[in-house]
Image (cartoon, rainbow, N blue to C red; front, top):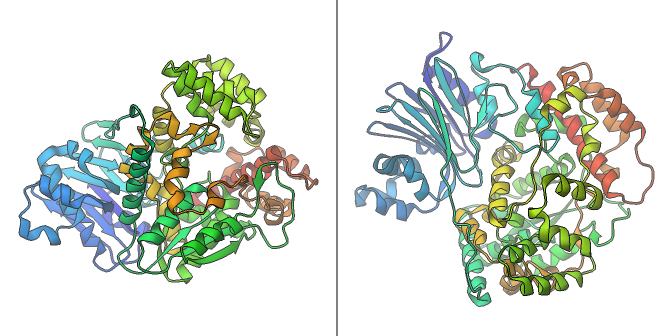
Length: 619
């Protein structure tokens, strides 16, 4: 992995060069090689990666431009053809130099021609402007802060905290909003430090200008032809996986029973010339708990079918326990208090196991449910939108033949976008059991009310637009950095590939739902690589079904004692938290609402307190 830093101007007696160096060195958990620095006309950039020469490859100076690039450019040949670089130099041109050449010719418009996972900074000394941009799905993070004297940027917010003038305290309101599932805005969890959003460019000069540079087509293809769509699906998946396979070293992948990880892992195995490592999380040993109807706690059996079919080196990890020490380390390396911590325990085990097995890259399929493998009843609204009444009626009948679908769900998904917001939210809360209030009571009432805003997550009439907005909200950049700091593993998601996303956003509703089959296109396209038992599994996986064995009331109370009296007092209602812990559910019957409260919301609330403890002194 790698980290960037930059500073323009001077503040508090420190030069821009000194600020830049301090910012990069503060991010040392995210790189392992020697830092490199480059300056030009008042701009100072720094970069460091995992190999000796990475730092110099991240930086470039080209005429009046200074460029820093964290990530990977996938369409180098295409970009080279669009620039005026000398042909003899093409093999030696770094990605940063290529971006500099493209920017010199087209300016900010050059972003539309860059495909890859990246965060970049461009200082244009002729305009005295700093441009910051990220790829459409946010695979690399980027943060900035500025005042009247200096502008600084960094891959991680902790880097910016290296300079005293940017230490303004924790952003308690933003932390509370994250715990309430309020969508992210431009602010970070630290006062005065801003986030560059996925697919966004920010220009900082005399003022700050920000805009979304990525505007993909959102209109579904007409007259869908299944063989053509299947060929397109396989093509974009193959290319996306190929782009993220390392040129050397062992390759690992996450493999569950879902279509996303199976599609990525099986494709990687077909393309790889060596045996693929595959890691599956299974419940803790001794788990025999109940699970809801239609769900399965252990996905390792189905995952093993794919592993055997492609001769993978399949390894199963069993979830460990969530404790205070784990929460402290997670806070430091991920710098994000709003994570699913119980899943984080077994994820960390997978990362460390992959590293110990000699892998440097782990392929995942995190974004599949909103990109290539999107599907479900939400597609019904698109037939309604297009006025295709007969098609809607046929698909609605087909969906009702499924054991997990009822008439209420069909009607809600079909006509929800046209309901008033009040009616939509009431129906969602009362008939679909989507009550988010239980965890909110663990926050102080004044903070909760200040942070809470109307979360208008009602679907629109444009399903592709909704998915595009969700892609921007998921923003995995800091998680990817955290994986490297945690275990030295570079995490890559082929299902976040820009070309793949653009293909998926133009798919017709028949690709998502047909004759009662969810994600029919994915089933057809993956039939040449994923076992039928996996494609047509009647049960869905249930992550952390064994939460009772891995998170206890004793651990929760120990964490309360760790954080009470500290900075979290401003955020958390400790009386309500203790009340919730004393009401720890005793029944072994699986209850979705209670599991969500005690396996996700309560750990996240407590982790926020640990996060505030860890960073209070730094800001």
